[in-house]
Length: 305
Image (cartoon, rainbow, N blue to C red; front, side):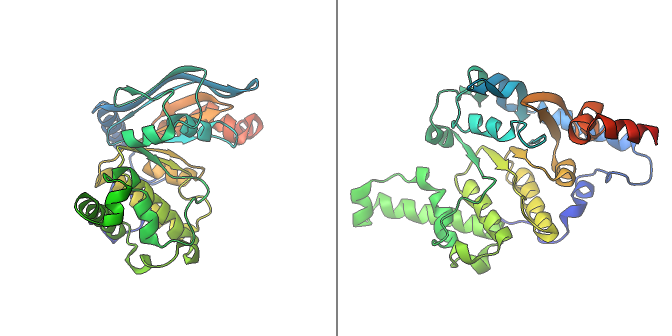
């Protein structure tokens, strides 16, 4: 499971054949190519359907008739102000919340009503906004936890360490070593996670999600709290997950530069309602999106200046 080690992700858009925002030169042809490529990718096969979902808590609506679909090989981003319902959407997808209405299907299987561990077995894994690792365990041990549902032996076989238990453990360890190589964690593999830099810990959490061998990966603010260098590194790994491993992703993130560089399509939500879905360029130019983030007064002043 190899990956390129050169290049910075601040130029991720250029690596994908896109012109950076604000770059000089003709953009209309390139924009047409980007839109066509995005549409082709979305049509290549839908892996996730989120249709007319509504979720409320004691009269407070967290998700208000939200609909979207994710194609195979697509990086779909969800953005919005704080409290817009982004994490609630993730909690519905992972089985933590059960919506009052709507339909959620993954690879044709209805997810509503299924427990989180069942959804994980179907092939959906996620990372968290706050790091959820075992600080006293090593990097390898934390990654091995992501292989839990791939174990095919019971307690007695594990105690005897023979036959199926030994073969399964060796196979799972080999899969973890591939992830260590993919995310360039070799120098930290034997270190307790609690002793590692914050950016490396976020990378280990991504590795644990990948250790599940997912068919869909949910990333909840993967670069939150990172400095510029750590953000660039994480962006490269995210692109490699999509492009090299072929895993579709749904990402919630507040870093707009990262979202606009990496995402194939973006959905904007505000107060639980979707206000725009489209390519990064379409979202950036949408007046409702500008109003949700900057306010009507700022938009009016910007247009008048």
